[in-house]
Image (tube, rainbow, N blue to C red; front, side):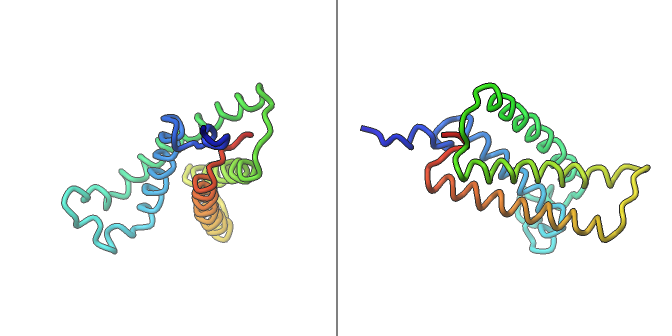
Length: 152
């Protein structure tokens, strides 16, 4: 007999595994934009030279973020239609996704030629995006360990 929570484990479904892979890829490409891969010699490993290419990592991060936003938007739409109750961790994770999306959009907007943000605002948005990504990862890991999904 299986435990009732086992059906909710996101890592046991292919869609949940893809979501985790997408989030890990976003974390990897996001971290790579803070030139740590070259500094800590990851880019010197065979086959990892591409990790030192900022523009490639930035473009890949934006493409993955687009998939992330579409996926999260589809999940939000499905949730609104079904009106399921969120788990406690699911609520925190959904809030982290929304905040990550907002700070990510602010980071993308600051790169437009007609948009100017004060340096303090840029730094606050950058730090907030990084902190939210770490929080989202920690919440996701907690949900994976506890075996809970977003909805009950």
